[in-house]
Image (cartoon, rainbow, N blue to C red):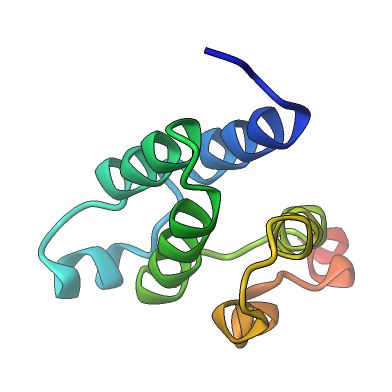
Length: 105
């Protein structure tokens, strides 16, 4: 399989988000996040970049996954590069952990 830099970035994002779903959200959804992350990765690797990223963004919101600024930047950059409808990433910025919050811990 041909690995582009964008696909490697997406794979790294999936790996970073694995296991980070809000426990209450997983209970409410009735399923864990990780298999859904894997589905997104399969879509991207199959050449369905928009579908995979769209699915990832929906799952991030549904599972209330907290994002770092770098992760959010990667998502927005990939959304632009893959010509994803910007409405898909609406609201993700609310899940970004402020930089100063990580310094307080």
